[in-house]
Image (cartoon, rainbow, N blue to C red; front, side, top):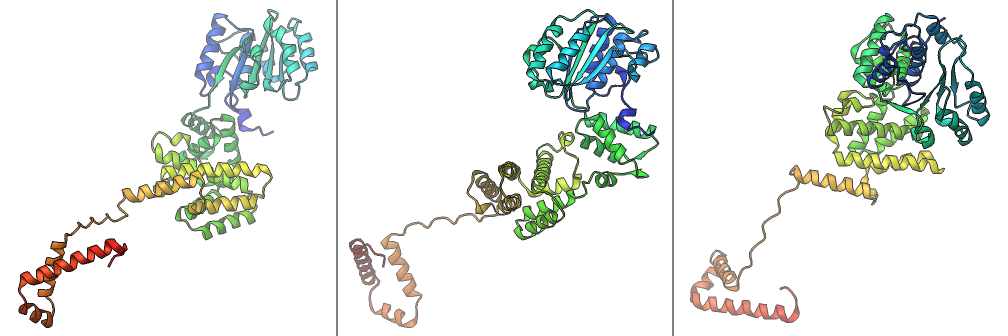
Length: 447
């Protein structure tokens, strides 16, 4: 019977756990020295190894021949715990056993000594799902348990665990696994499973896994039908080939082509794309572009992995950081408005129109975007330099210009000018200019 890759390659020792050395080394040292706590709390996101470490710890504390803090996986205790035949190690899902009666039954059983192994271990997964009364019922035995008893609690939402529980447990935080480590592990599993996995496909799977090894191996399992697993086949298998259409939509928005943007949206709407999903994917693309623009080297590990590098760099050159931030804020606002019961298609269309034509709206985000475009245009020299202001000309200078223009005029004016002395003409013109100034002050008009 075929077994999923994430189950087949589940770690069996602390050394097999990937990316959590700060936790595994601490647990190994405690087992070697015998300084074990009676209650542990493992905190972290999905697929980071919380339940796997809990099972390994349960085997290690009961192993007959531990090896440098690791279980041997050969003795009767290790094999029995692994196949579930030893009833002294109990794994409980708090999501489906969250009532006070379940915890009371656990408390009544816990006082009995183990039958086969040295310690009775209770692994409670998703402990934050317990009800308040169930937490209260767990407090006393968690504070003063029998010597043979150990609790290992695991949760993804630490803020939902009461402080009274936190203070009674030794807490270990599991971090997201880095993409480089994930890519190496996925490539190793692919080689062991005789899969032909290209390096860029492994990097893409690692980014899509979002720090979860279980998700990465599940994605690899999903792509295993291809003879050679490439980045294109990964995108196709994940249903992310439609991201190219999201990139086309953003290209239309960057061009300010409202008609083309609405046409692309209409096609995706007809194909069954939900408006909320479309806007979320558009926001994810803008986020990747922003990270590529502001952190071209150090931010590669933060990318979602749904878009290729050429697409991101090409769009980053066409959009400013201020414009990207304003567009992301606008998308987030419209995504939130979809939960208010508004027409999703109309809200999405209005959002796209606003992104294409920011001058149609006077909200703060669009004003920021328009100001950023003006600043970019000014810095690029798109506007001509202002003409210097003309200096004011005195009446004497104006008279001199008139005389010069008269001297350069037609023949009739030149013949008239010869009959009169130049000083007389100059005085006459000065008197005319003074008369015009007086009339301008009197009537407030410009002649």
